[in-house]
Image 1 (cartoon, rainbow, N blue to C red):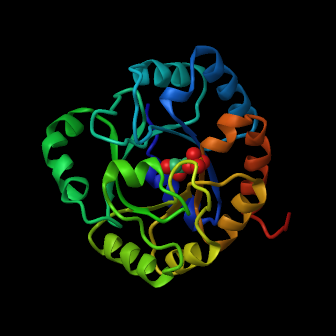
Image 2 (image 1 turned 120 degrees about the horizontal axis):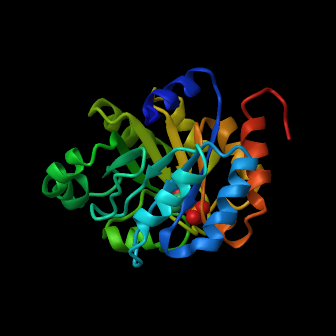
Image 3 (image 1 turned 60 degrees about the horizontal axis):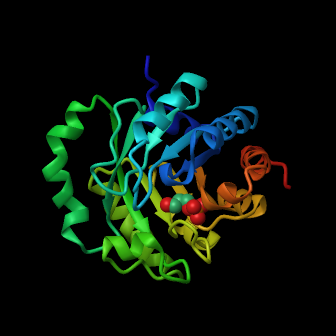
Amino acid sequence: MKKNIYKTLREKKNAAQKSFAVLIDPDGVDNSSIHKLIQVSVDAKVDYFFVGGSLVITDHLDEIIKQIKSSCDIPVVLFPGNPSQLSKHADALLYLSLISGRNPELLIGQHVVSAPFVKNSGLEIIPTGYIVVDGGAPTTVSYISNTAPLPHDKNDVAMCTALAGEMLGMRVIYMDAGSGAKNPISESMIQSVAQNVEAPVIVGGGIKDPEKAYNNCKAGADVVVVGNAIEKDPSLITEMSTAIHASSSRVSL
Ligand code: 1GP
């Protein structure tokens, strides 16, 4: 029986409980590394696996998700770079509309073409306002999407973008500096967005240490996503998870 991911996101937000999502790029793992990653993530009480990437070259998306689902109860949420990155074995799909950009294909075009396919997947669909913020150097997401990222210091633009997305019906806001970003999103920008929307706020891109993850949560992030840093050093999963979950209480690091 699949979990209702959006309902859990809402409940956790209402209870001020912060969550940690480990991002798995299917191109970055093989059978043995995924096994280790799952084990460490279960022990560290990771809340979600996000699976996807701007560019997925290998064709083992299904296989990786099946392996996760047969080994643990951590929900798998698809974070697709394009409509071909779908797997009915996942629990939910972040149905992304790139609202920081002005590329109609990524706002609505690709959605139209893939709509029947997405509908028939049986996945829980979570309409997500996706905001790419300048992370200090070009990232794959800004290149592939052919859009300019939102300037890193324009908190008011980020806030208005998120607000518009929410009023258009998007149920989650994902603020992303892009995978491997030089500079992660500032806490002041996260705060500007989180204070003005009711939707759960997901934050990722360039988060390399537990202190930054903790501070993002204190600034209002409901879910912190980390990919690159833990791909390089999987032992960081435990520290990141501890920091993010500690931020749910009043204790400081
Ligand atoms: C990217 O938000 C994710 O879309 C995570 O970024 O790989 O830099 O942690 P990193």
